[in-house]
Length: 266
Ligand SMILES: [Ca+2]
Image (cartoon, rainbow, N blue to C red; front, side, top):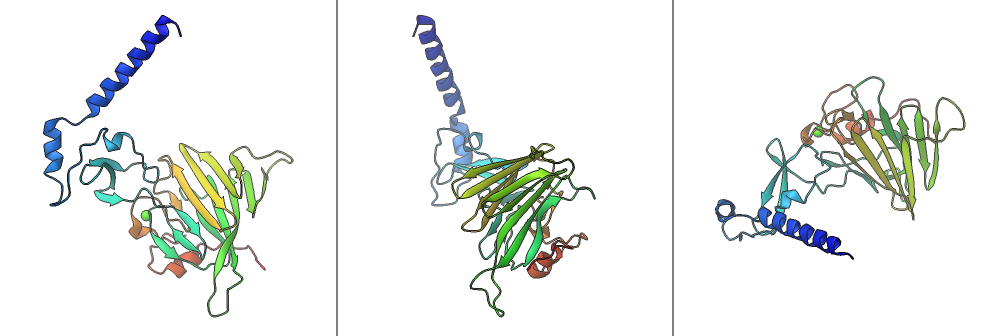
């Protein structure tokens, strides 16, 4: 290492130390937060502002407010309401569903359903459908199902996932592999992602456990999605919206409204 490299390293370290020191709370700010902590909950002097090192990709428009009561927390709010950034959106075995806005419900569908799609126009930018089939322990009285296949369409490109098999292609033109949809195999998992406008959608498929986790980062489709995972507007109350726009209460009726018409299953 030459002399100028040493100097650059020292200057960089000095710069980092200065930045960290600048982020430390001054006495005035500490008192402001200390007075806001509930009785018995200690105020914690955090080394860095929690909001400066935390993101909430589930709610990209959420406002972050640092919380120093009992720890170093970054609390995210949408329209004044605290939201849970750690909710795993998607479908888990049985299947238990969690919408983009965090509403949990159980739905025993059979055959193909719209998991989520672009609902901003009659010609959607993308659509993700999933197939549910009965589990081995399913009976006539107690129907239990699970997800077994996923179908992603982005523009004229598609990916069909069946267990660990993935087929990609284009609906127009033959022999060209899909480019809009990225497919990664990781052990017994498949990670599918695609970008539309400013938004990246990621679908993580844990094949053996029949678990589908869906996330997105970007703002273009907030409140413009529809399907079993809801509309992604930050409000759990309006998530049971049927294709005709009606908001209903019943989870089964809501789920069945998103059954793909014209698709047949054994
Ligand atoms: Ca919603």
